[in-house]
Image (tube, rainbow, N blue to C red; front, side):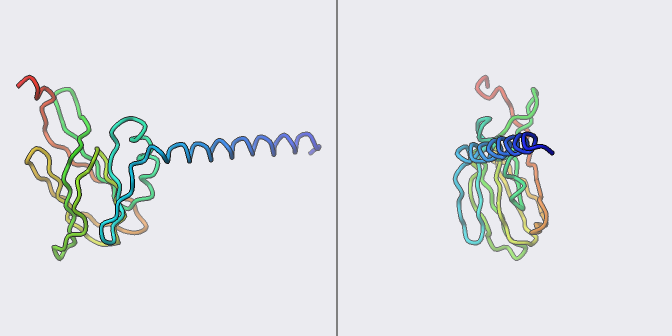
Length: 151
């Protein structure tokens, strides 16, 4: 390879590396803040397209991803302000928080958990197995009415 070709390849590689670094850091400000509750680190949010995209970009880093939606006559819509209660199989509370948007990402220790999420007075439960080497995504969907203001 001649010197010009090598120099060109290095320059192109640097441009791609800079673009990747810029993209990675650009998404960071859109992430909601991390919270700690006991041994569990979590974040919740996803209201707005920028924050939802930032959360989707880091989902793979969390062993548990919860998603909340309401089924309407027009299709599904994301939900927020969903109380979430996670217990281990002995009944001890591991996490009790409110999802500030349609996504909640949690770093739970490996184990089996019962998740209870509520919306509009209706609770749903799931039992899940979380592993340190996996990624589990659980969807909660409630029947909602998109025309609440008309009622």
